[in-house]
Image (cartoon, rainbow, N blue to C red; front, side):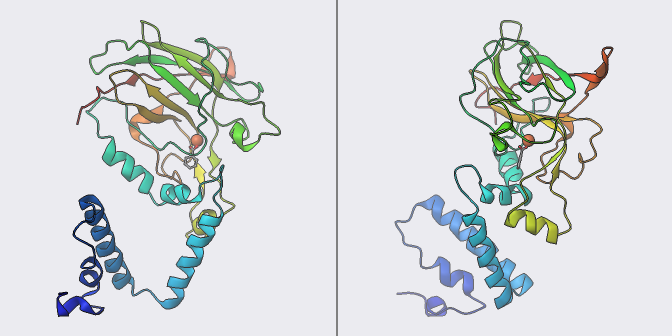
Length: 286
Ligand code: BEZ
Ligand code: FE
């Protein structure tokens, strides 16, 4: 028989009233996660004394967030990103030893199945932007080269848009490619110096940022996914040192260790190079 103290819902015993309904055969992890969710959600509602109108606004906001989603647009992940939730989940699940390359947010613009390219290839197929040579090494924690590492890269164009955002006006693929290291662990490819850009802000998440007095910009960055047998996959960016938005990234993706030098070459002020080494963590390292 249900404990009479929680058989009926009361403000004081709200959490117990809900969690007591969970059946004995429910999955233990689900029971734990939902129990914590209900505990924190009720505490939050009590903390702010949520009004009926605010509750209705939240329902309407979440409804519009869902309605904004389709095969190309994931407004819920964007919401998770701007609330710092994506970065927190990533941090908890990718703790690495000092010196190892850190992860950051994946973002919505990665494309699977981009063909492998020979080292040194120029990934800027529209040829627009300030050219930049990206180079470095993939090593293990002891500095030994990692051969056979796949380096999947993508960046925005000179106007701050990814190719998939402008299928009509950009060649496909543009500013993306995959490179595989040889025995020396080295990589090199030509691209453009990325520019800062706003995350998609024409939906409910953008509206929310506006109401909070937050801008939607991300500091300029090049995306990388580095995979190598026996090593943890690194999903990361290198950020352009000196960018105005490094300390106010809309999605909290910047980590100090990922801020890279982009230096002008003797070729002139619009020709750059950026050297960054990826230091891989063995699989199974806690
Ligand atoms: C990106 O860096 O591509 C990105 C990350 C999170 C939200 C939107 C864009
Ligand atoms: Fe990006």
